[in-house]
Amino acid sequence: MYFLRRALLLIPTVIAIVICVFLLAEVLPGDIIADKLQSAVSEEGMLRNPQAREAAYGILAQKMRLDLPPFYVSIRSLSESDTLQHIVLPERRARIMDYLSQSGNMQQALRMDSMYTAHQPPENQAILQRQESKNQWRNYIPVIKWQGWHNRFHQYFIGLLHGDFGYSYTQKRGVAPILAEALPVTLALNLLAIIFGILIGILCGLILSRDGGAPLLRIIIDAAFALPSFGVATLLLLFFTGGTYLNWFPISGFSELQSEDASAMEMLGDHLYHLILPVFVLAYPIAAMIARQLEQSIRMQLDSDYIVTARAKGLAKYPILIGHALPNALLPLIANFSALVAGLFSGSVIIENIFSIPGIGSKAFAAARFQDYPLVTGALLLAALMTVLAHFLGDILYTRVDPRIRFSSPNRTGS
Image 1: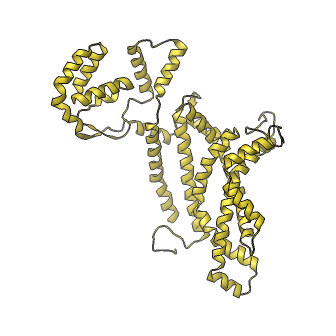
Image 2: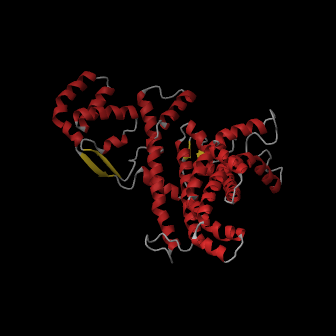
Image 3: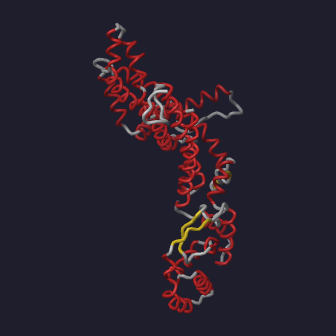
């Protein structure tokens, strides 16, 4: 039942993440429709008059569903109407909103806008002066409006359920296939970094927790904890790639072999060869963090009553350390597993770009440079979902290591 409850809690968590990512996409700067129209002008020499531009803008907005309301409900002033939602051209919408803020009457604002389009500004000003004192109060009355199911978020969420993450404007194809190609690379990079980081960190933590510790190892761990990953990655590229000093590893990329000309084992070896430096750069901070936390946790466990009892029974030092102290000392590390995964994904964005690895991080970074927001938000959503899954797996592992722990009740510690 515990695992079922935890799994059911994933549903509202995922919905909340989707809403946050959608809202982030809504407030991102830039105008992708204007950029696409600008490309059409440069390529075909079209849209030379405002009417043609507004018509083309409206067609693209309708195609991209930007003419729909953003959410199920909206809060607007009493003076606004549904007509404003269908005016998608930013400069015209801003002009109408300016007229509306001064007149308080949507029909009057639309009439003034039509006069502006017909180059009649004096008449606009006259109407504005007559109307602003009469209906301006309507701008200060908030109204909650139900927009129905036909809105952008609903279309976005239904698309996600069908595997549609949107359309990449820079790569001219769907976001889902792009992420599907990059996901195995990012997973391989991060999983190898987690595995090696945890194993090396536990080993170093056990060595440091011994009586006297290891002074040289402690210095190395402290230095690794302090050095930034991007700096270490840059130094590794300078010294071990390119041939300036040493040419032991490839300078960038994920593979140099063609899949048609190489066997599966050769491709696997080539991928691992390209990942040696990136994995090392991501793994050493994990190892340093785990080593320091595990050392402190083991030292606390060694002062516990059950360790004193085990010593009184005549158990040897290392069986006590490995069989008794270590499992309990690992509990704080397991609790931080999801935070470690989240930080690792954030760090892999930088490392993938430094080493030119075609993972999710490098795809999202390149998309952000060109304001390809569907690809950026798709990568963000995927990373967030993977972090939630890691948190769920961490909770399950937590209860497996210590069956006494349950999260269903704050007063219950046993099954």
